[in-house]
Amino acid sequence: MIKKGNIEKTLKDLNCLYRDDMTGRHSEYYSKLAHLELCGWIELAQDDIVLRVAKLHIKDSQNLKDIRSSIKRNSSMGQTNFKSMIVEVIGRSGFEKLESLVNSIHQNTLEIELKSLRDTRNAHAHTNIKDCTRTLDAPSTNLARFERIFEALKEYERKIKILKL
Image 1 (spheres, rainbow, N blue to C red):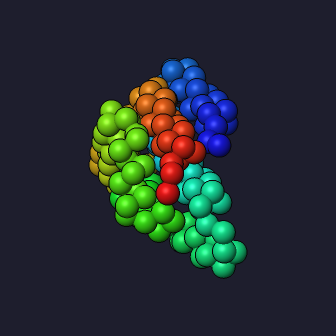
Image 2: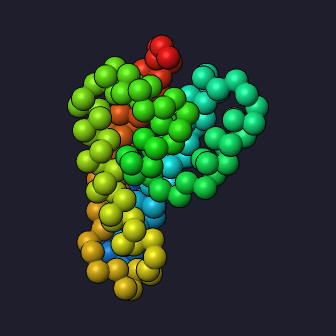
């Protein structure tokens, strides 16, 4: 089950550090770290959901091993990657059933937020602070995004539990 605990505390801590930075010299660091921390948490949460789906629906140990290997190779937290990992476990028809159960608001939230985060992460993950050309959001923005993404992922998690294949 995905949890809020550590990531929420990290984002809140980074937000406090950001707000307390009177000189403004370190605010970029806190912003970038909050963004990368959130993206890392999303990847881990998606991996956890996919693995849980696999454990519910896959009985063959070699197939489970293959799913774990696929999860390990995944290095993106986009909606497309999340979908393809779930489809690998439950198939396209299973995914269609899942999406018919998931509230469309959560589906749209996840798609929009992940695209926005992925684009910014890709721009910042492969550069240093000095060479960043895009504006970084304050940690409070990523904390608000986290809440919306958490609720959307929890919706997928809840619906996976009742999914009949």
